[in-house]
Figure 1 (cartoon, rainbow, N blue to C red):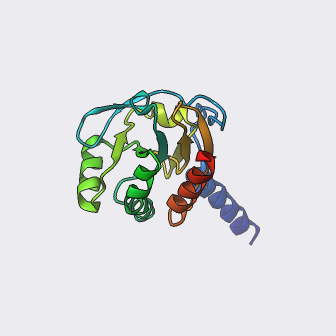
Figure 2 (spheres, rainbow, N blue to C red):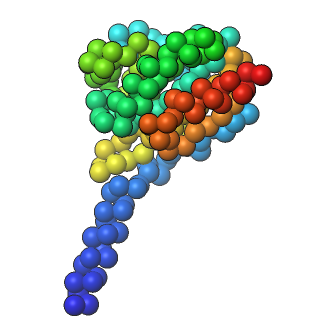
Length: 179
């Protein structure tokens, strides 16, 4: 009985390590009030997109786990549903994951997404934003969002968001911050 208990504990520890581990080199997450780290990444069409090209606009920079997965699809659909509301607030949506531009293209076309999905295949941007994790041995972007003001300053950080309610929460905060 004692041996079975030890095996169960060992399996639980191994399971937790696989599911909850983060790479040791993960950077600290930027916080509200800090200048947003700059980057240039390819979008789903292969075009280079830089954060600095959106100066003068609000940027919803959201990191997500993987293209074509249920939670990430829900989150993306809600941003797409609310896209006109974001445009009315002078805001753009930028989604980032470690998937390739080709994978993003399939995701955008299949799900009717009309905002930029950026391919962080080197993991550098996800790491710089403290949004890199390992899940079952695979490196992925973690579901975090940064609301960046028109001057490039992070105004709000959302950690491990609920994909169902997230877009509405960001819109509500954006409306408050613009006043």
